[in-house]
Image 1 (spheres, rainbow, N blue to C red):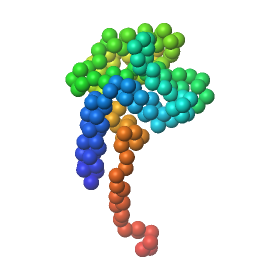
Image 2: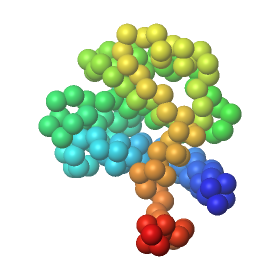
Image 3: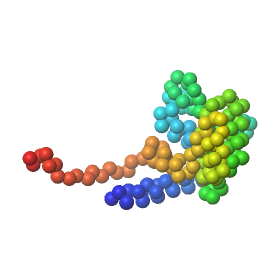
Image 4: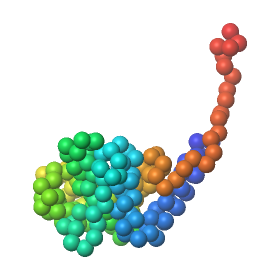
Amino acid sequence: MRAAHAQIEAALAQELLDRIRASPPAFFEQLIVTLLLSMGYGGSTADAGRALGRSGDDGVDGVIDQDALGLDRVYVQAKRYAEGNNIGAGAIRDFFGSLDRHRANKGLFVTTSTFSSSARETAEFLSKRIVLIDGTQLAKLMIRHSVGCRVEETLYIKKVDEDFFE
């Protein structure tokens, strides 16, 4: 049953990624903010998170308050790329520069594809904290936090209650 559950989740994850890749860029940027809010960042969409992606956004697609009081912010870069179109080190360095322009200490770089090994290495050694989320991780987070999906059915597996028979 666990193997069947894993197969169902893998198929759901792939379907989520396919739908995200087919959606407009603004939808993807808003999705990231919604996911972060669902994960407990900020407070509500109205006062904690907003998508910024547009022409002249200075390389930042969204910003979310890290806490309900807005004492710290996380800046977001969202790249909706096709599978196999990997993010390279240059994109990480560009985002680092954008964080600098916003005087930010931390950022989140999310893609529907993957990161090259040089991109991961670059993010690891920069002076600002940049967390990388690839398509696989994104889909898993969406499933875990019920963003873009919902519970269809709950199955209960029961076994004999040994305490009852003692």
